[in-house]
Length: 345
Image (cartoon, rainbow, N blue to C red; front, top):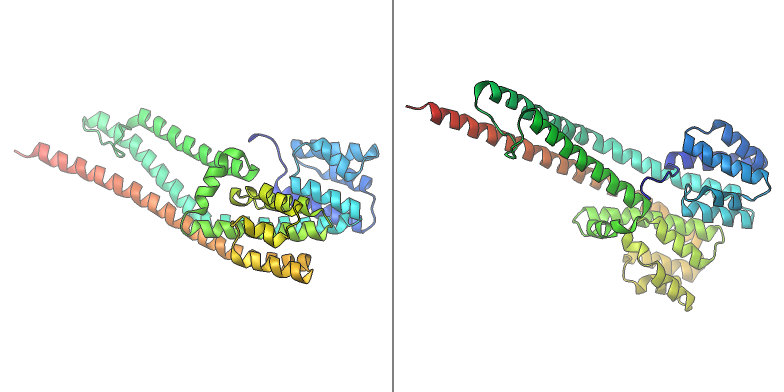
């Protein structure tokens, strides 16, 4: 569900980092969870940490305790913690998870930092249009000559109310779509596929998804996870319908005895550089090391891809602002010309 509470990436990164440090220092998991409960902030987070702490006090393992938290933690976290416990590498696994989430936060901060100013400019333009709708309506009531800036019949107080409602509805709809894509809801898959076909944007989004996929493959294989489960979780970690749609076909190919390279290449959904790296990794028997190296390469490419996305986002914002300004200018000019014609003898 869209409204369901889920741990944020920032909270998850800090949670994994603190657990890894404490467990490496030899502090029992029960004591670690008690400390986490003391420092937990936010009602939802405190409730989930309390559920973990209580379950572990009753003798449950970390994996079993996570089952009481529903989907508050992502699937990859659940599965990786389970493998970490089974292999005795829980502290190392948690540290790897923390590094991954830290990288995601770093990319997000860079993207938001680059897109902040264009969004501020867009907000100013939207505010100015709203002000013009209101003030020109007020002037029109006093002079008898009303100017419709947008040409949609939006003038005065009533026009401002309708305009504000429309702007708010569009903003809420965009936020809901972004949130739904992050949660992997089924109805967003056509939107994700369409985005991959857009010039410039598609390649950048594919690179970011492949960076997540390569990292997840490195983590799950390094943890000693069953290969089919590792594939399922890694493809899901890409958070892109173009790749998550390949989970079943690839699992079926691997179950039939195909290699990872053959299974991935049979879908024709992955770029050649990814497939070549996977093929070389299998032939050398160094899948973990190769995926770690490939993950770093894609991470660097993902940062470059984010620059492309922010540039395109800035251009899109400028285009919207330009359209709004040009439309307002033409409406005001037509009103001015109309006034001149009315006053000619």
